[in-house]
Length: 278
Image (cartoon, rainbow, N blue to C red; front, side, top):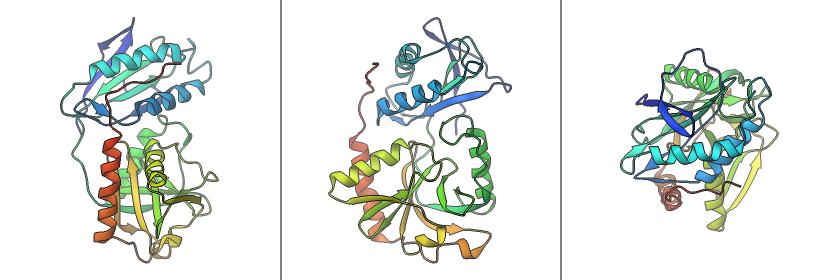
């Protein structure tokens, strides 16, 4: 991935900056922009604002609020080129007077099917409900999956139940019912998951949440979701303990057709960025 150009929001403007290794990333958010169009920018804005609102006075000593973040987002939108594929990331750095930053990156290529690997220990994240503090850990966990011949690490609760991917959310199909982990697990609120569930309901399909072990997903079609990659169908699931591996994952022409149908619907959600500041 292109590491991009780094900007700090100072005096109402984005100015090029040097990223420090000592910074504390308190909140972050990112989204895919294709030829100036993006899905659910309002939801990304609200998730970022909500994350900042959880910070204490040490992390946010100057009481940055949505009133300060709205013009920052406007500057970010203006900074992203109208052509090409981009993957901007907004960041809030703890303790700074000017804590708002943009990392402007070109988006990597669209990927296809995915292979999963179950992390052998319970979820190691410190703050899974806020995007930002555990991003570096998520990247490390994904690299662990790659060492095991997979593309994404699946995080499990202490009882072995499925939470989500290190840098993605996880959903599955029980025939024509779209399912996902329930609120008894600590998963990051996923904008793409919300979009996919909304598409399913628009198509008249049922949705539900449930608490499951990996082995409970035998015979299911499984997807991993992210703002960058959209929907990726799962073809294999590895685990150090084979008893925790689904016996069979549905990955056939029918499942690929379903991915394509839902991906077309997601693309239809892309618009020129706009959001309600209130």
